[in-house]
Figure 1: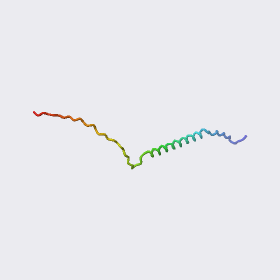
Figure 2: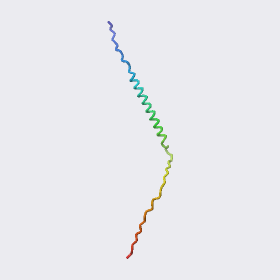
Figure 3: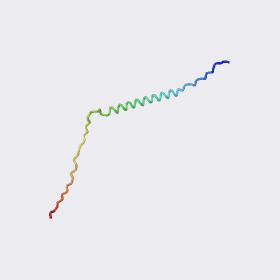
Figure 4: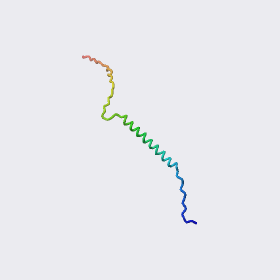
Length: 75
């Protein structure tokens, strides 16, 4: 008889767990990359501070008001 302690066999490593972490990490990197592109485009689309912005607007004359003449007689 042997007095050495018996070793328990190690359970095999789960490849799914490693693969899942890899997929989640890759997806997270893609999302961060796309958010960075969207943020850069938003900054690029806005006008720079200090630049003047010109708005063109046409004003039309108001319609003339009707006039009322009141005559009074002096008695």
